[in-house]
Length: 76
Image (cartoon, rainbow, N blue to C red; front, side):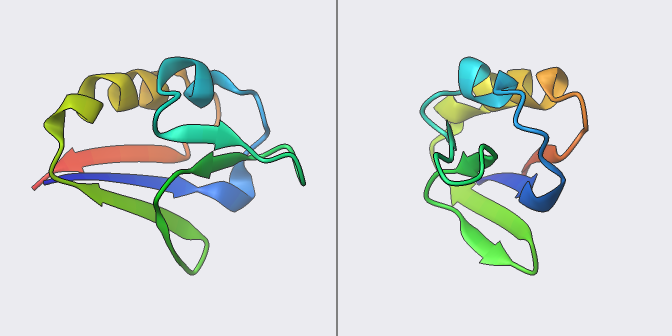
């Protein structure tokens, strides 16, 4: 299982995550912050759990590109 987490309240809206992983991230038109698609919110941490390992590479690029280090990815 691949687990991607976004700490959305610390997002600065740079859009790098969307450029690296457009199938997983989108920018909100309301506040200009990143949205982790199909995620569940738990106290400001948005988490996506997926059995699709093909998302790993793009999400890892998003993790590296994020200037505020608010995205994490791990495999369980």
